[in-house]
Image: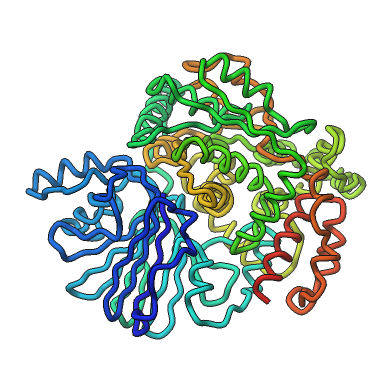
Length: 597
């Protein structure tokens, strides 16, 4: 994994090598520049870790220059095709395959790539610059454009420090954050800076920019009609994906929780690498601690196992560090646990496989059960909606309070409009501003899901694959891992796996009673029944206890114009008082505002 950045415009000669993004690629740095172009690359050496693999890299014909962040798992197959066309290679990198592939296929190379990527290619002959981002948004790419200037980077912080423009908060985007917990592309928390959308490319001809889709995630034309045929294809796709994700010139490890997804990835990886190490983060004295379960899984699989404890002190230290590192507010507090396990794992290896994406693809979240329950029994529950208002918005400190919150959310979500049901289940704060735009987007997603012919249960999965996965889960993984220069690979978020998953009927994934049905059946090939059937806990630190160690909202909001930006600020604070998730979301927002206003 790496960090990339660049500027194209009349001020290119004012840029030089800097270390703003060096945490993403501590193994080497390089630049390319001329009177109008500056390209920057920080390298994490995974493939061909010799100096031959350094970037920026120039194509075999000398015309194209690339800076690339990511990993292409089918680069050897594409390289073989290019060699048959007479192209000779100087390195064993996927980077050289992309830039040489671009010299042959142009932008048609991008749909051919199986993997994660964010990249820029400069055409020295025409002056055109192409930016591209992988189909599922695994790797981030931000850009800024004004008049005849374009700048881009792996992280917002490079643009904020190197580009001269007014740093204005995008209040509309911040209201979407308050409701969803993240800011979806193409928007960011800043006016004038954008996220390149997954599966899109951007062209800049020196005058203006244009964007277009090169890979559109669509519902399939047909689905599996036989369960056992579907199970066979899922098994083959996962096996093949993990094998490809293990490609590396340096050692690879796995993350291992007590749940199914990481256990399955570790079990399949063990088939190809008997010496693989698994890393687990523990939360001592917490309801969410899965150390015991992870140890049992590791013992059964026969893999080396390292356990990393998350103490209150380490949480406080890491929380402040992560909050200071974030370029946008981010409401998913499990990023702290992710950051800890990434920090410790980076001391041992450079590459690790995770189980991220399993829940979105196979129906693993409890909110899916809630949605299915309302779809099936909403007519029974509707007269009792008032129960949602009677139950307290209690903290998550005990099993009773945890389930009180779940039941409260279930009853408050009941509605005859299933789009509203899902919105009620996923939203964080109930605000008026921005709500109509989100509902409009949800309705479009709902229509797309129904067009698949897979029924009403497809909608939540389709929404999460297109939104929660890239803008919450994968953002969390990228930020937490790249803080320490660790490459995290996600075998579930693979082109072939997703193509198969989309052909599986949602009834075979989840309903009001169970989750991940077909994935559990597939896992029986590699894992014992007791591992597969464990109840889901979630990768979350004991937030209620640990929030007490952080600055409180009242302290953080001093000298911040929150009421100017958010007229309903007092309501937001009141609703966050007994809800740790909402409290963390406001703390993250305030920490970010203190840096930018």
